[in-house]
Image 1 (cartoon, rainbow, N blue to C red):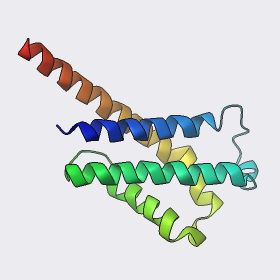
Image 2 (image 1 turned 45 degrees about the vertical axis):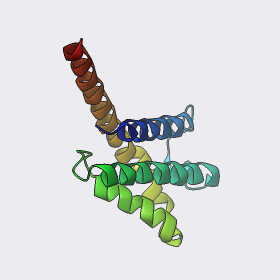
Image 3 (image 1 turned 90 degrees about the vertical axis):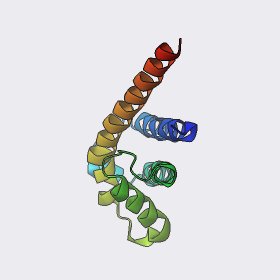
Amino acid sequence: MDEYIEIYLSDIKRAIEELESYFDGYPMRYEVFEKDYLRRSAVERKTEIMGEAINRILKIQHDFPIPNARAIIDTRNRIIHAYDSVRPEFLWGLVMRHIPELKKDIERLIAFLEKQKNEKDESCS
């Protein structure tokens, strides 16, 4: 397996964890987030990173099993190329629903790849 895939998965995980840290102690209410330009910008930036990392993974291995990969890349493209159509409620949906699901998927993939690597190392010993 390509070592860059592991790097990109790690980049996605780190972007999610950084994004989560921006909401520590935050009143998780849409009406607060809607007025919080700084956090909305942070969600946009971290989503761009996640989408680009997934795009790079799929360029290496087009059938790599990331659930909703195309939708995540499309979200990244929308934020970058149609920035004027990105509304706070769209970003809030990412924070509340989609990014937590992506985190679970990425953690599962990383654990699976680590297990495969360990098994391979053991069989080579």
